Image 1: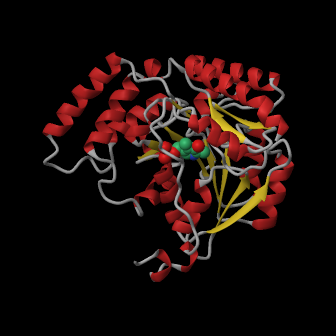
Image 2: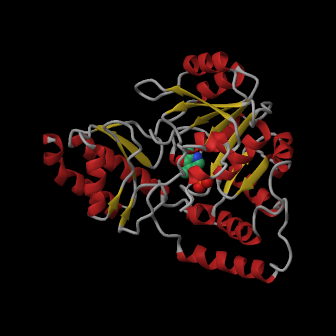
Image 3: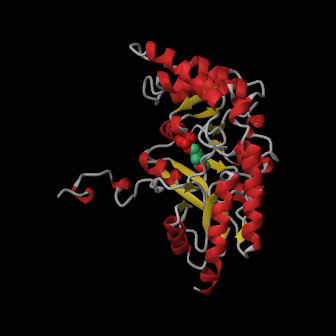
Length: 362
Ligand SMILES: *Cc1c(COP(=O)(O)O)cnc(C)c1O
């Protein structure tokens, strides 16, 4: 039998593991930070109408530059953005990959502050970009001083600040973004996958004017409840978008994806109507788990990083056996739990409460 090690794989992929959160079909799936509420029926019907028209035209290639979708995304983000400042791909993972293809690559480097999104090092190795990880302090928060020191020391070609940060939930303050931008002359990406959940902070999109090396990436996979469609996007200077056009595959966004995403944005208010409830469930989850004696880290997102588990792997398996999926990211003593519906939140709280006496005796 042939195995991976028998193949002439690129050196920087040897020993790597693919991204692999479990996809068990269990009743309570709180492991990949999706919006667990279903898409409202009225929106489904309008998206299906748009898809039907797109299917009729599918003998032709789609609009390579997806003008209608970019205009819709610009309108959604506001801040006076022009469609020329918007870009999109099949998930923000693909957007980030394109950024590294254009601005990273052999001999170049990507820096971020860990623990952070587990895809960054994988995207770096996939594009042959060096990966530099700088540890976050105990409270996971990025201060201007810490960010500036790291960027001055390492001078990366690309840096990513994830805010709110996955998997810790830590919000990102504008002071850290501004200090980072001025501290080096590379590309600065702010990954705002969870921005809609952080009602307390304004998007870094507000900082784009006059900063041509600042890129703000967003996604429809989280608050927007559209993970299955695969639509991530980016706002930046039009010159950055020109750079991404050099590396994208022609027609990378299918006519169906463009139609579905454009239709969904027409209903952004309805699509985002669950955000307030998800935030309330997150806070309820935080209070309940803190009440059980766990350490809950502050979160601006739709998930919580929770510490104080004597054996996170055992708790993960015990919950999984009850049809509840959470995420074990290998952070000692910690699990990450997505805030779902009220019923899902109740289920996970009750399951952890029932385990707690066992847990603390291990
Ligand atoms: C979920 C997530 C994304 C989104 O990925 P998509 O490819 O758009 O689904 C991006 N960044 C972070 C930090 C995430 O947690």
